[in-house]
Amino acid sequence: MLQRLIRKLKHDPHYTIDPAVPTIALITLLKERGLAYMRGWLRKPFLGACQGTLFVGRRVQMLHTHLIYLGRSVTLEDDVKIDALSRHGVHMGDNVSIGRFSVIECTGVITHLGEGFWIGDNSNLGDYNFVGAAGGVRIGSHVLIGQGVRFHSENHRFERTDIPIKAQGVTHQGIVVEDDVWLGSGVIVLDGVTIGRGAVVAAGSVVTKDVPPFAVVGGVPARVIKFREDKL
Image (cartoon, rainbow, N blue to C red; front, side):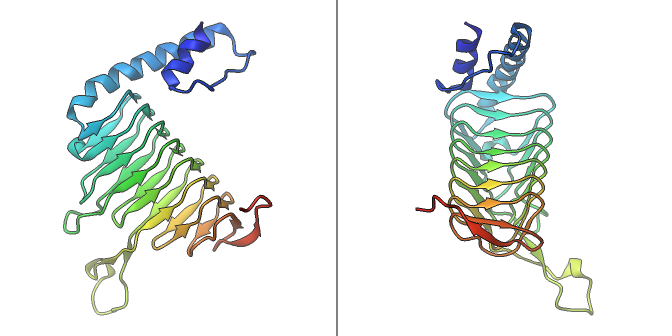
């Protein structure tokens, strides 16, 4: 019965729980999920849109909530911060989860309004992710993102030496992560990069240029190591 309740709360009929998990742990999970549901229920009226259930952890900050648009069964874990101030806001698909202590920041400074953030169905941000979406960050569906991953979609200009870098303005091209990508822990993705469908980026890599579809890349800067055997 507990497993059926958890599957219902997860909105995933295929979600399975290891039989070795003790009943007391399942009860604790249900209690925490129920509290998160109540927090989400209280937040929903202030959002731009929310198509279904929203689960909100402890100490979650949501700024400019009228610019936040959510699908079904979205989970914001403990200590998440979302600042949606931007031209297009924050858009999340169905079954999206945002890990603990993650930050989505759509505008760096109000002198230059940012573009916004999009993430597709069944994708996640891991714990301690940082998304700088001033230049626009678009993440596709079924994307796996590990812990401590950072997206920087804006660069400071520094050509001139007669004035401070801070006074020279910024450039941005945006970041795109296509469907079915896996980004390992500690990956850094810089502005102007597109990571192709089905690609894998090794932990700790710094991605400075486009990644071909189904490529496995790694290093600083990231380079193609091989292509997945099941490339279509």
